[in-house]
Amino acid sequence: MPVSSCLDRYRTDWGAAPFYWEVVASAFIGQGRSFAQVSSYAEAGVQRYRIEAVLDERTTHICRYLHGKTFAVADALRKFDQVERLDQPQDIKRVLPWVRERIDGDRLTLHGGGVPIADVTRSALGRRDDVGEFRPHVSDDRLGDAGLGFPPFHGLCRSTTLAQV
Image (cartoon, rainbow, N blue to C red; front, top):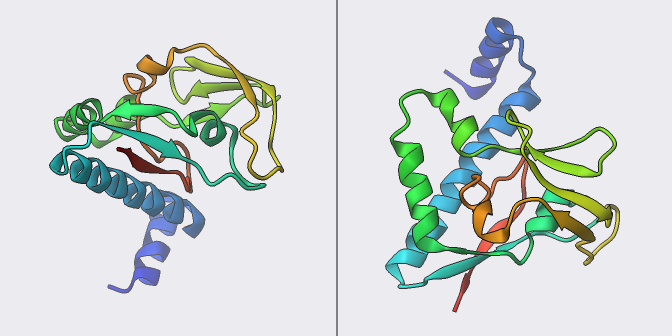
């Protein structure tokens, strides 16, 4: 069945527009890319990696906040293993939640649980090569436990990881 027919069927059956499915596909691709990168780091003996965001005018607050933060390869592999052991597909939202911004845009929270991650104290939205400033609510070493150790962090996320050597 052609992809366009599948999209038409799902839009009819579930009421979702094609863009929704683009976001879903992007999330799967992003997770697959992160798993491949982290697995390759482990095979190469790399112990840590860092988040690398595209710092342009469209970069989200969460990607700016996580840019440059480092994580242990072993912790990421444990998180991927936890995902593999899930019984229900919808449980992935609990284990690897996306980040939401409050409507006023000054707080980053985990989707679903509303756990605050950081407050934006100086926004850099609309600017290149500027991460902005944040007041964290979660220590850097707990971000991975919260499910924020590797992209994607939101729909159509462009962040990636780089080995720390």
